[in-house]
Length: 109
Image 1 (cartoon, helix red, strand yellow):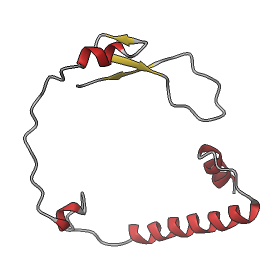
Image 2 (cartoon, rainbow, N blue to C red; image 1 turned 180 degrees about the horizontal axis):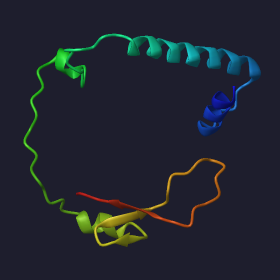
Image 3 (cartoon, rainbow, N blue to C red; image 1 turned 90 degrees about the vertical axis):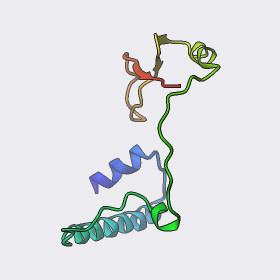
């Protein structure tokens, strides 16, 4: 299937034909299962954010901004930056030609 071949390409997986057939069947069984789950009536069901709530009571601390003592040395370690933003290469598909643009990612330390 074309979509499955594309998925293998994106994941950079090289597998033999037998393994490919088995994996494709498993993935489509999983997708079919999710299609069945979509049919369920979930009216009034509280969404599960994390299973940690069932393991132990979770106590969250208040968010407090903190100054990181070596902030400037970390920022200086990056070859390219604009103020407090670090320039990083873009994430691309494996076979895509290099992009001339540079993503800018903020840093909060």
